Image 1 (cartoon, rainbow, N blue to C red):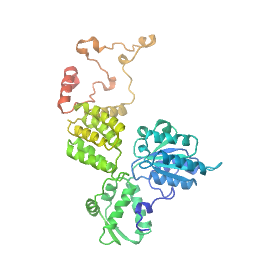
Image 2: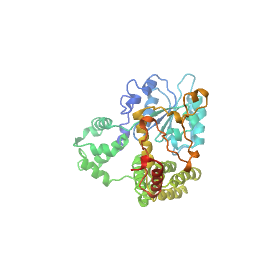
Image 3: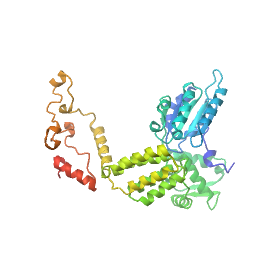
Image 4: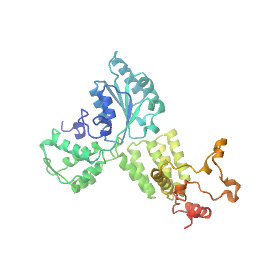
Length: 425
């Protein structure tokens, strides 16, 4: 049917039709080998929206001729999980393969909901395939995570998007009968953000508003104009998930509390996971505020804990308070840059030896080898400071942390200048 979304009409049915994720499902890749061997165990697909997590789960079920159950963590509870497990038990006879239970947005399941899956996964009643846009290390309970392999999916690259676009206009039952003049694709691909579903939805929109529905002209100007005239509301299933959170973070970073609260409201009204927002506030408080106002991290962490205990809708007030506090705080990325600079140095210089005077010497041999020799105990000196080198000899004197331009770090810089020659310039 033509009113079926283009993304659904083009949903791949086999691995050969599947676009992207060559590191997982390309010829000889680990997941493809597991699928084609008919031997599959529980795993979690972690990646951004629109990269084929649901499609891949369905392809696996079809390829291995397994029953397929699907739940969404947004609207499913423990009762739904138990009903699916009971159905799976009834379908599993003797040597028949275990049904696949696909759980979309598994990161939104509570601990009790995830606990209810454990027994069925351990006993092989179902093979669990979870899909998540969030780091499963933080969102999936350890007992479940330890029984599942995690595979990371990537946003589609330009080559993948070109393949998808060509397939749509040449193979879709309706589009192949239309004439397309594709003058430019930069805007089309840029607005899709590596999301296959978003690309096809944009293409659907461009076709639907075209002056001539049988002759479609695609260029950067037309795509940009059409999208600006048809701004979609926030999609809690992921369409604008990253765009809105990006605008939110940049508004807080830019010290605009009004814009920050607006984007916060967009996420709340769109059904975004409040813990996702709270986590971003915790990260932002260190990355963009840092030592300019160390209390920002304390408040953000308290916000996360409060949201976890209270939930919504009352949680919106806590999120708003924290958002306004962070937006109106002085800003510094000095701590963020310090660790980035240090990591770059580690990658460049490798595993430099720890200076002897900084090593512990718990044994006689270590003492004979001059471990801990000449170490100066800071508290034995005036002001609890003594000038000594703590970095490996090859990078001695390197300055990774440069205090930011704010009143708090101005005090820190003044103190560092009093202590260290490398801060005097």
